[in-house]
Image 1 (cartoon, rainbow, N blue to C red):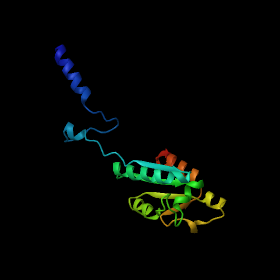
Image 2: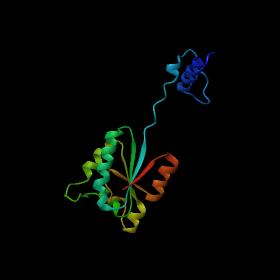
Image 3: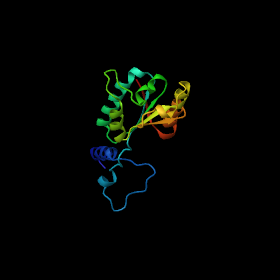
Image 4: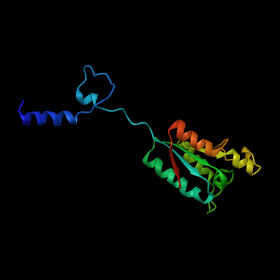
Length: 156
């Protein structure tokens, strides 16, 4: 083979996708064999532990879902960060959080409140919005989502 032909062959071969450990496609063209499976939906956990951060984080979550509509999102709160997930909670402008939580919940967002925080306040799940669930510990839940379920972590 001439040097120029060898160079063209090597360049063409380098451009082909390589799949390690897969059996060769039978009856398929190289182009159809090169089509990759769709990437899995992203998963992100947003942490809120400061009450004043709630409007900002909810805006981040809303904007993130516009860019990634199939994403799985969890919002985990503890300490003063749980306040927006309590019944009748209102933002700094006096607007109730409940409709915004309901809208995001309808898009698949999981809102999680730390039971350790509730216990520290001598409170029970009765004060938590119907849009949220109580988890035993927020830190444990964040770590579980990261290590066992592959969630990326976001803290403001």
